[in-house]
Length: 362
Image (cartoon, rainbow, N blue to C red):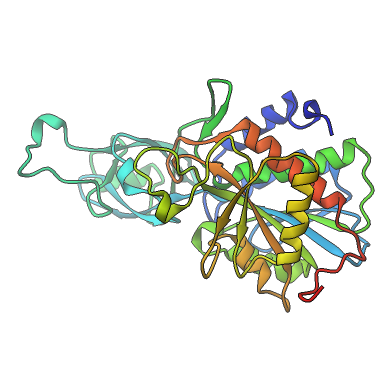
């Protein structure tokens, strides 16, 4: 496959639209609509489950089933408490980072529409070394410009409203895609691109391919746990993000040695089926696709764990994308790595056959 066929201009238009649209955990529907609309020309069928995971299918009548999967949700906040003065305190929805919150602009999602707000913080002039406080969950707050709780409520804001950051996508130095929620809507983008390439290159797969964009990963792999029961696949290739450990203040002894620009990261661990992993490594070597290696302990912490241990065991593997500044509004991935993940999944699918034996002793 020639490099020019990997990511095109239309793909990047979709990527920007997809990333800029809010898709908080439990409220992913609008993002899922955007994603489904993009992949429809490349698939034969699709379905949506009860909680919103979307599955595009190629060869739906095939008995042998292969999944390529990412997750669609982004971290966010819930309105938790409104003071009588109109300030708003929050609870996490997923692994939201309290330390990045002060001075951020946000959108509060209400039945009356979007309400703008800001994370307030005491000015530097009012703080001294003796009383300096770090941002914590119990002291960060939103200001929506209201003067009372009643005025806040008239705007449509109530306990349970979801809150997302408004930071938008940029292309940094013609090298890095940057924005919120690349963890892991960049994965949804990559598996959509695999579907596009299969269609455009007229690849006939000998199995059913289930392109799966799961919900609620950020709160415990919940979407994957549900959707695997519906699909009951034989093989699953999961894509997610991992840390670029070459940025400041990270410890490679603890976090491993992975870097943006050095290619996809292949994980070793109990949830990763060795024969499937070996096939992916062989494909990477054969096609000169650079890759890195990582080791997981008890769990990968990704949807791989949900697929691997379901429905009697699914041969599963994890292909990760190195990412800088995870769970911030400036998550960054290198375009060349995105292209190589797409290429590695695409080429791996071409090497999976119905007769291929992923049994443990093969």
